[in-house]
Image (cartoon, rainbow, N blue to C red; front, side, top):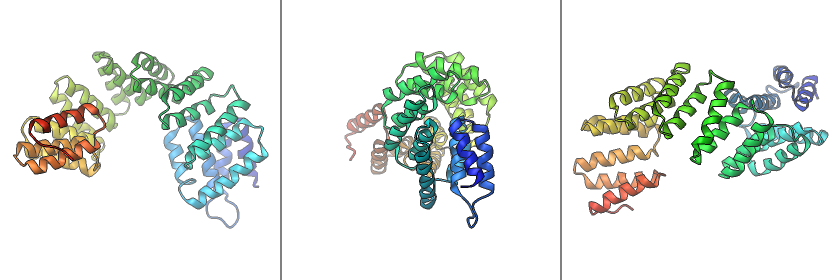
Length: 345
């Protein structure tokens, strides 16, 4: 074991993330003799970034440590030895849980997180990561319970508050979601995502002016966020401001030319104006970005339907039905086909 590895492990066990990062970086710069690159220090960096909520950096480190099978095997051997030597240390089990969760063994990670909780009941981290496992398994109430515990233990835990708000919003509990987003903004006032989350929840709650101001603040902080431009465009479109909606959809595509939902939205605007060729081209651009976009197939179906090409229309209605998850959208298409005397496969 190198001095850098020993230093990194010690600092991880103590929860000293800054010092652990320094040791991991030094370890990465000085791989063992005879190796070009050691995935283990990069996995250590991945852990540190996840614990800090720096997810973009965590993903970069993940690519250097857990994408190749031989790297996964090397990291696995290290982590198993680490836990065996430090079986009474909560952070050792937390590290094991993070390894298992990121290497396709989510179910097995639950036990590791629970061991970490038992050894360090005051730590928010294992509750937060355990909540993520429950959320991936669609056990939303269990996820909410763990996110709430993480936030109780650490009221400044921004990722926990954010995910708790999102989980509440998925349940339609906007009155519970909005305070979480507001707390995140107090903790990180320049977090564009927090303002966008708040805007979305306020819009769902029917508080349109505050929602608009939150969308604008999110874009002021991050003007190149295609998803927020798109959300603001949808906000305008549902209120009949089609000119402003088109402007935001166009802005989304300036930020990300391959942002498929904006292409679909522009296609529907063009279809509503009877700009048939422009609509058709927009829907096809959407499908180049995502060949399972139900709104694009639905739009192409309407295009062919208005052109009198029933067979092509039915083919695309069928594809839209396949990919739509919204039951209202599916029922709308089925009712339309029934009225026209057609049946989808």
